[in-house]
Image 1: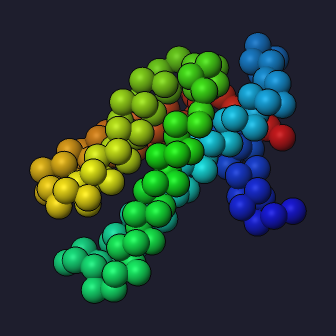
Image 2: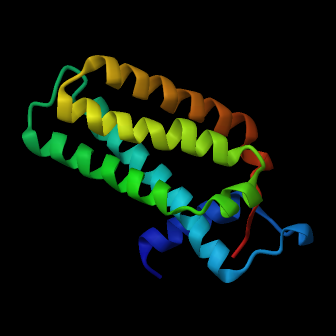
Length: 144
């Protein structure tokens, strides 16, 4: 099994539920993987950014960070709203309004060299992270 796929399966299992009220189709399960793809890309971008907190010494680091932010944004946009709603009634609002919006702002902040947008992005990403920590046990994604 592909290592990335294995990590996604493990993440899905960690959030998994066998609750029969949430009959998930294979297509919905596949679509839900985009949530975890987005979260992984965001985490990787943050790791790279934290290495260069005083600024990027290596242009390759900044490029890698931007690639991960774009991957996070693309994956988040690939998740269907009905899948987010099925996983948790409030997930769509937080995922779209905080997580996805933060990725847009991180990218825009870099393109426009605007610290105010980066500050807003960080605040939104932190708000999503806080919500996720408080509610991840309630997020229902089926075990594979």
